[in-house]
Amino acid sequence: MGSSRPVVEVVRLGLVSYQEALQLQQVYVKRHLSGPAHALLVCQHPPVYTTGIRHKPYPAAALDRLRLLGAEVHQTNRGGLITFHGPGQLVCYPILNLSSFKKSVRWYVCELEKTIITVCRRFGIEASTSPHTGVWVRDNKICAIGIHCGRYITSHGVALNCNTDLSWFSHIVPCGIEEKGVTSLSAELLRDVSVEDAVPHLLDAFRDQFDCQLAESTNTNI
Image (cartoon, rainbow, N blue to C red; front, side, top):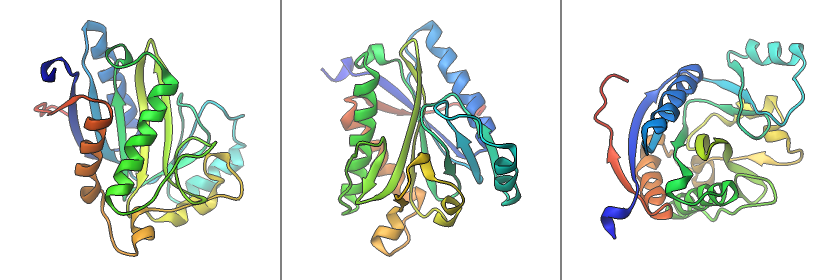
């Protein structure tokens, strides 16, 4: 049984710009054209606001206002509305061919949510899903999920707040959901929890939830 489980390459990118991460995702998506090449890109981003495809274009003045805060602004082809990425947030981009798992986008999003709920539980935090995509602690979102899937190959992914500066979220309506807040592992536990603290738990939970094998990347050209 063990050898039949899909192998997913773990690629640790460190702190990379959102634009660079987008380009790298496309590199890994294209690798699937010549056979299964599952990868998990793990990173953090400098401050950036991103918008998804389910949104009418933002007024230019609103985007300029966000840029004045010192953040980049990017429009993307993922699902979901506007959100923020920045230091202290664990961003994970699974580049999977769902044909090796289950050919269902709904199933995939549910598995991502369950993975993050498990991570939170490992820290002693009771998290859950809601009618809105993502993972929540009460009425506060702790992890945003926005994916793209073409020909059953996934990109984009999850963003788990570890010790993120949550004030960045006050300038937007995160994911377009009114009357909801944001939180982080650190805010819930009243102690500092870094991205580095959370990564091993995320990898373990992902491996178990997706019933796959993880292999650390040896690609030093990235």
